[in-house]
Amino acid sequence: MNFNIKITLTALVMGSLISCSENQERENVVVSNSATSDQSNDQPLSVIFMIGDGMGVPQISTSFYFNDTISNFEQFTSIGFIKTSSSSHTITDSAAGATAMATGQQTYNRAIGVDKDSVSVTTILEELDSKGYQTGLISLTSITHATPASFYSHVIDRDMHEKIAMDLTMGKVDFFAGGGWKYFTDRKDGKNLIDQMEQNGFKIDTLGLSPYDVVKKNGYLLAETSIASVVDGRGSYLGDATAMALDYFDQKEAPFFLMVEGSYIDWGGHAKDDKMVIQETIDFDKTIGVVLDYMKKNPNTLLVITADHETGGVAVGKYYDVDPNTNKKSEDPTKVQVYFTTDQHTGELIPIFAKGKGEQLFGGIYQNTQVYTKIKQAIEMAQ
Image 1 (cartoon, one colour):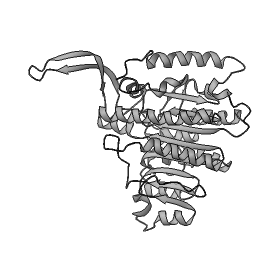
Image 2 (spheres, helix red, strand yellow; image 1 turned 90 degrees about the horizontal axis):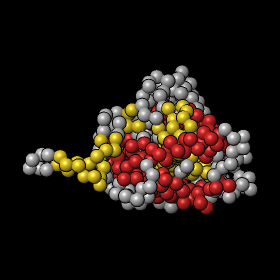
Image 3 (cartoon, one colour; image 1 turned 90 degrees about the vertical axis):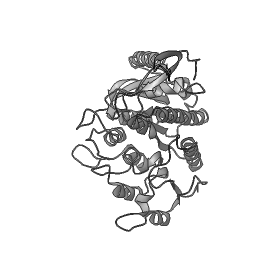
Image 4 (cartoon, one colour; image 1 turned 180 degrees about the horizontal axis):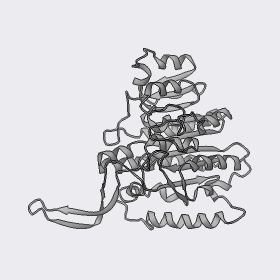
């Protein structure tokens, strides 16, 4: 537990919102020091978009209380909140939430890459791919799962995994890592999409994060469905895959868009599993550290971190010891504990953090569709 915390997350968020509001009233906004050191760089802006699935303020707070090191969230000063309701429900699901951020369009729960009328909408990944960007997706679940799928696929229901897998073979994603090989090989239509992708210039690995081939597109399908949780021994996969993707893009010498999902924060909320929530949030925090280290050497980059929704109605509260003989509770004033109010998604406002060129755009409170808009604005401002 980290007892050297000098400021609470709530104070950090509120203070940042006030600061962002003041900055936006000025005609000429000055970007942060981390983004100004490369003002002469006329290359297009690269974007790293990190989504902690199910991650609200309480989950982020666990990275302050249970971490052995200072949380990387403390390195952000540009912070806002997003509203997450979908077009069909006040409480969104991951499909509608991710689609809103990927396309700028509100849609109904379970929709992937389509608007509320089931019409396909171009995603930010597809737009940037058409402009010469390298693109990448990293997930802990199947790469066909709702959040990653919303950046490259267009289907009316999130459970259409085989159709989603087929969309991935179209080649708009240059680097991907996750699970879900069964949707590429064990299919109702009998097709082997891995063979098809390899014939189309992909290097595909189903065993591990083997060295990438810089000449080819690279895909890693490392589980039948989802990769293991931290609790079940996943190890450092999320940070390792992220570092590998960033190195691959550097070798390509082109701007890139990379989405990284911390999937199991959500799963821990659904299971009311405090250990999973804590360990998955800390692992996501460590991966943020990998990205921040990359940005120190590559300042022509924007990092945006948020969630699609909160899961579990999590609260961080008092910790009580229970006497096994008397069953009486006594408070331990040096500890905190994670509590759950539900095993479902909630309607909490979700924090959004930004660092790098254009970070000042992300302060305030706004609908999740504006995440797409603000990323595009940041890219245009950097040109």
